[in-house]
Amino acid sequence: MTIVFDQSGKDRREGQLMPAPRHPEKAHLPDNPIQRKPAWIRVKAPGSPVYSETREIVKGHRLHTVCEEAGCPNIGECWTHRHATMMIMGDTCTRACAFCNVKTGLPGQLDPEEPENVAQAVAKLGLRHVVVTSVDRDDLPDGGAEHFSRTIVAIRAASPGTTVEVLTPDFLRKDGALERLMQTPPDVFNHNLETVPRLYLSVRPGARYFASLRLLDRAKQLDPKGFTKSGLMVGLGESREEIMQVMDDLRSAGVDFLTIGQYLQPTRKHAAVDRFWTPEEFAGLETIARAKGFLMVSATPLTRSSYHADADFAQMKAAREARAQGA
Ligand code: SF4
Image 1 (spheres, helix red, strand yellow):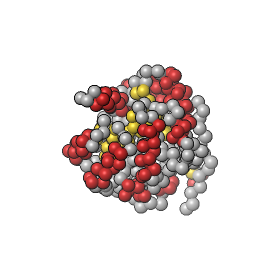
Image 2 (spheres, protein in one colour):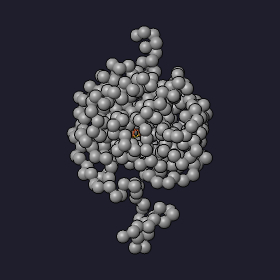
Image 3 (tube, rainbow, N blue to C red):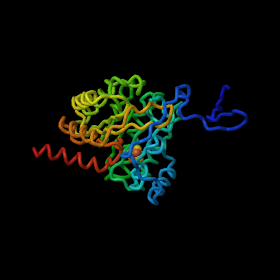
Image 4 (cartoon, rainbow, N blue to C red):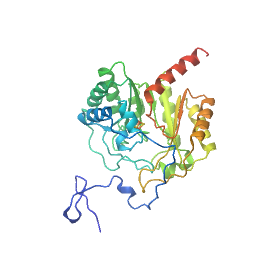
């Protein structure tokens, strides 16, 4: 049967309104059975009173969070500390990465009030450090760089003591986009490599490894005093040696902070987990990364880009100061 969606994204099969699929481009893919998670991947269930307050503030300002849209396992813990990661420029992504649970399709227009709404929510949440990310907006001439910049400015105006970390798309083929964003440099510029170069075509087909690496390098050149950060998922079939090569590449690009976490398969249509790395293996990766010179490393099964980002930012700043003093 042909399924027709109306303009509101509803399926009108048999006269019923059904929600549109979150990932229409994956509907034809074969199912990948979801493996049972090992005992070391256990998370706090959402539902504390502070969790509900965080949710109300986010919804009250008509915002999206990557915590919800990506189905992050840490939401129970993070939102109990009011640590919500804002996802700007809508809830619909123009890419179709094999690991990501954010809805895909054609996004709507930018909300010009969103930067101010984010700023007001950050102020209400009382965040010392906020992470702002976005969907990929390949449909916009600047990939959303100006919208990021306006959001940084609005947060700083409303909460002058809050440090701002942005986790951006790659702005592929958008000349001048990074330069536009860096006119208002964030405290931390984060862009995730996600996986090793060999797996890009299957895991991150719309992206290019060296373009992402160059973006990080250029961000550091544009603001040498700022911090840069990147992240990897493991469990997609990469080898330890390949990860070590990526670490060297990131250090060559001057990246300060590396996060490494376990990939978890969101649905049967997403890439299969190849294996679960053990906590001991993560500890081994952290030791290697620190030896390679990163100022800060977070490598645990549940590490995500924004997990404990405020405390980690404070540690990274302290590490830079200690290094400058030759400690
Ligand atoms: S780790 Fe990041 S994305 Fe996940 S719940 Fe925490 S703040 Fe949100």
